[in-house]
Amino acid sequence: MPIFHLFKKEKPAPSTEHWDELLIEYVPFFEKLEARDRLFFKLRMQAFLDEIEIETIDMEPAELDALLIAASAIIPIFQFPDWHYSNLKTVILLPEHFNEDLEFEGHGNGRRIFGMVGTGKWNNKMILSKEALYHGFKNETDKLNTAIHEFVHLIDKMDGAIDGIPKVLMDQNVILAWINLMHEEMERINKDKSDIRNYGGTSKIEFFAVTAEYFFSRPDLMKRKHPEIYQMLQLCFNPQMKNKVSRNKIISF
Image (cartoon, rainbow, N blue to C red; front, top):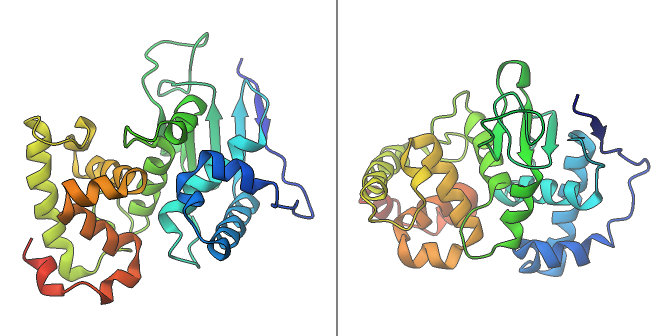
């Protein structure tokens, strides 16, 4: 039987000063921030860890596990200072990829899942593979970050539906442009004419999450190769950009 461990929250909150070295080493997004923004980022991480339980299965919890999960949560909503993941209570971390019953090596077959947002009995829970969590921050070239991907699904879900159209982030007047843009690029993906990974071509839901991974992992490359998608995601995740971009230009995609 799998053994669950809980990442214990210390009270009062421990000092976060030693986090800098770990975050600079593992999280490029944090490394690029100015000193003031780094402090704010860590405060947001601490608030997340105070609100969300982190459980591990068949392994002892490690502080770096919690830090990378928290960083993954904060990166996509960093520009929204009052954001809280009201649709999440627990993150469950497994040693490696798993199946729909959360079985992994030694416990079952069909182990193909690296991360998922739970439904049914797993509602308000996120399940992640530790292997995938660390890969997302160690590999800086593959445009893949499973944990960010799953948190983007939660963001998408905030309007009541996971459908690839994040209405809580996207103004009504650009939704049609976003849908058209998704369809056009998904067609290119499915014809092997895009560098966006194939999973993004399976549905609008996955297109949004996969392109968000790309946006946060390789922003300069996305800006060069997919300027329209980059601009639309800027409008989603950096709300101050809405005042800098011509609305007519957006609609003309």
